[in-house]
Image 1 (spheres, rainbow, N blue to C red):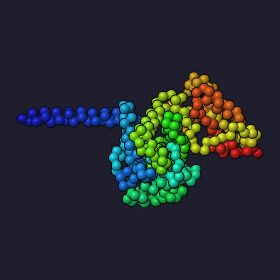
Image 2: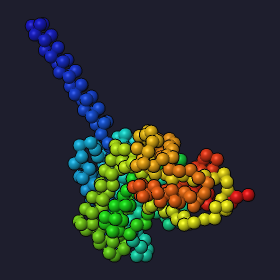
Image 3: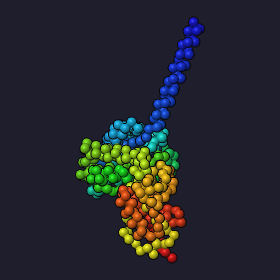
Image 4: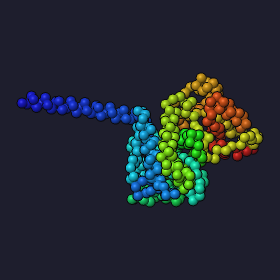
Length: 375
């Protein structure tokens, strides 16, 4: 009898041991997947904006579920939702869900509103809002915290109506800014070129929901419910399917840019707000300690800077910054020369390349460099 009992005990120990191996193996497989957290804005007691009688929370949820359905067809992607039904989720908890999932991306979906017939799509990354309009968007989205219990302690006294409070939340996301801009640019590119929506560009604002995450994160404004035509489109099944497909495609393109050679992952800068530069400039107007390069691509792979890796381009340099290797073509103090090198890089296929400026080896905004005059 004792022998039989001992055999049964050994059997259960073996079964439990094997089960633990299966669980651990499954968890390992999950960790190998590309994790995307999809966040439908608002929900439950928070309807979002009600432009033209439409409900932002419903449209955002439908679009998010559509994005997830597309992404889940890819076996290498795991989708996590902050909500799949009409429930209220604290902004604080949305970020925690993404962080707990060790997500590779966080995508929050919203709809815009305005007192006018404004229209068009825009995608936000965390940053300092450059104008009152961007700050107004941040205030609107951040105001949700007033519906949350204990928001004063959870957000350490953050005030959505204070520009200073918004600026204070920027620093934590700096290391993910380039990746966030890359995804945001892919999203805007699809909206503009595939759906022919009006491009309001990639913008920066102090959005608390993005601040809570520790991965590349974007907030998509699908359009304006307050615009008669655009509101009807976004409230329609076709409009929601269009938006879902476009965002899902952009996410897949972003993932591919990380998986493949860095040539396929160049930063798209053409949609960035305030990206206008003069066609020509008097060379002697620029300080001699300013240098220009053409950024042709960026990605996680460390490539040898030989022409065969960069479509025949020579004089390619690289730096590692914010977790990415950034590759540059050319080096000159002459702005007119760098414009020609930019055109050359585009002719080689780097259509999204752009000019960057350095002062004494440190990157500075191009607009600042062009304002710098020689002594």
